Amino acid sequence: MNKKLMAKFVLLTAIAVVAAACTDDKQDKGVESGPAQQEQAQLKDSRFSVESITRGAAVFQSYCAECHGPDAQGHPDWGNPKAQYVVAPPLDGTGPSWKRSRKDLANIIVTGVVRDGKSVMPGWKGRLKPEEVHDTIIWFQALWPSKVYDRWEKAQAGSQKGSS
Image (spheres, rainbow, N blue to C red):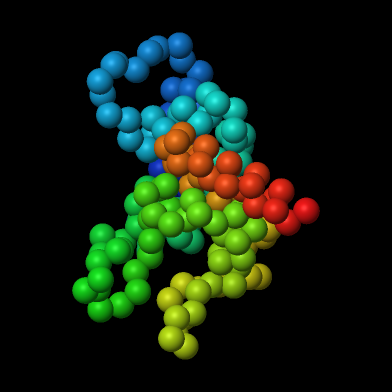
């Protein structure tokens, strides 16, 4: 997908999320919520700014979606012990990303990942500004189900107490 089309897609998605977050309509009971609904719930929860999510979505689509998927769902072979190569994990709260601090996540994005002497994820140092890295993390954290984010937040609070 070319960059102009991707930018339009991200902009339209952000507008739709903002518009949905501003309505008073109630979700139908009994309907499973997907990432869009979870993101809307996070926006209503005021955990993240709409601006940060919008910027993060644009960065993610430009730099990360090719490997991690457009909805941060990860590579289909992630978690498959028979996979012949390392594949990108999900960042939508269904993988291990929720176990890491924002500082650790930012470090991974900036420095990349090397396994067995081979780069399995490029580092984005010098190509992404610190604010872009932060906004990207905010975007995929906004996709996390509330229970996952609450567990992450509690773990972060506990780790900060232990490091004092």
